[in-house]
Length: 122
Image (cartoon, rainbow, N blue to C red):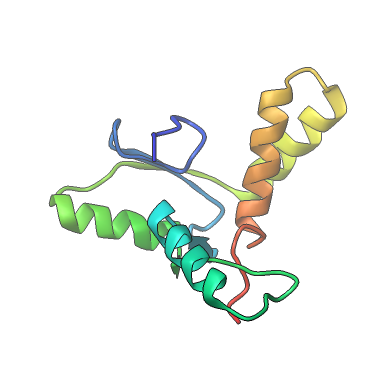
């Protein structure tokens, strides 16, 4: 995945992270090859459920950062953005309507800290 500086919580190119919320909120991740494998299996099935989720791993951003630190053998500097800061940003940008990109980021951060970006574990 191409780094998305200052938007995605982990920026491996700049070797830094901005943890949203506590960092312990569960996320689900998937990569292209996992989606490809899922599509192959779905194509073999006699029928499909109305909704199908594809996720390869459930974890947290804190755990993901720790894996990177362990693999590369160095600490990753972290900043934090609390739930209160995210809600304040969301409220301010929704009210002002002046910065659509900042509003979108606040909305995604809100989804992130509330577990809404994680697929259900079924």
